[in-house]
Amino acid sequence: MSKRDFYEILGISQTANEKEIKKAYRREAMKYHPDRNPDDPDAESKFKEASEAYEVLMDSQKRAAYDQYGHAGVDSSMGGGGFGGGGNFSDIFGDVFGDIFGGSGGRGQGGPQRGSDLRYTLDISLENAVKGNTVEIRVPSLSSCDTCDGSGAKKGSAPTTCGTCGGAGQVRMQQGFFQVQQACPTCRGRGKTISDPCVSCRGQGRVEKTKTLSVKVPPGVDTGDRIRLSGEGEAGPEGGPPGDLFVQMSVRQHPIFERDGKNLYCEVPITFVDAALGGELEVPTLDGRVKLKIPSETQTGKLFRLRSKGVKPVRGGSVGDLLCRAVVETPVKLNKEQKTLLEDFRKSLGGDGNSQSPRQTSWFEGVKSFFDDMKL
Image 1 (spheres, rainbow, N blue to C red):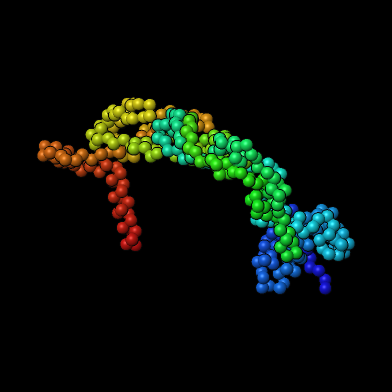
Image 2 (cartoon, one colour):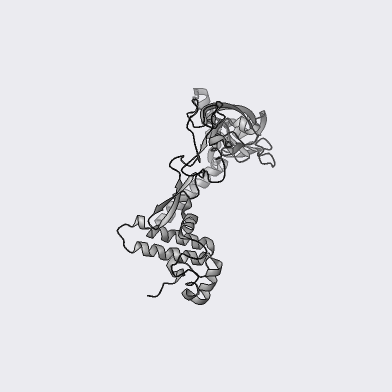
């Protein structure tokens, strides 16, 4: 029976690179893995077929011979069995599936593991985000045990090399016709065992503690920005180096200002009289109050820009601006005299009222045009 084309088996083109070959093999191997297809008698043969194609195409010399001569160019180098030559099946399997079956886990030869990184969300005011501040935070974490110096063994004793894995932290397990690596069941991947554990940490080498840290918040930070504190994360197991602490900023909503990048926005209510005749108001900024001149005939929505009253970006650049949006406020709770004055004012507009309310005039013209078009 003739063999299928290796490229066809993996579903790739002849120009596929190593990354594409590995991805394709992983897909086919997971699909036809015998353990995942116990009721399919053809799964094992297809699995072997994909593995044979993978071994050839991942070897540059074998791939060149196969591209030139086909199966005849690689049969002899593979010893007729399909898994001879430059490697064995367990090597291939571990290369592609080590992250699933533990081939790359455990201690291995890398020494003590690094501790986990931690994240802390720091809730700060807009003022502190813009101007910067130093704050203290309390962070619960796993810290190295002071009693045993992180070894996990009782004072005066020491961990011993695991007799099952010989200190490797991993063991090879035979599953059918192939082998996989997994964490040692005796030492759970540590490579060492503790016969007399520390009473303080119960052999873990780490204990839960809450530490107080000072965090310097630079001016200009915004929600989502992070500050990295090296070595302030969890302690590593077996005396391994600690991880890092990432302090993530969360800026609280401000009652007056709204931030957009380096600019600040706020709404400024102005009276009907100031909007019509003009005037001067005091408006707040993060640096104090400033005078804002309101020109006559100001309409709701007009933006007034106060330059350099915004935020200086934490990554550098010019200071932003404060943009004040005018909101004309209708007077309320008028007394009889005030209502009379406004009635007289309305009468004084006479037939020229529309010319003194340009937006109202244009709006009504638009409405009239809309209804006229509907009649057509």
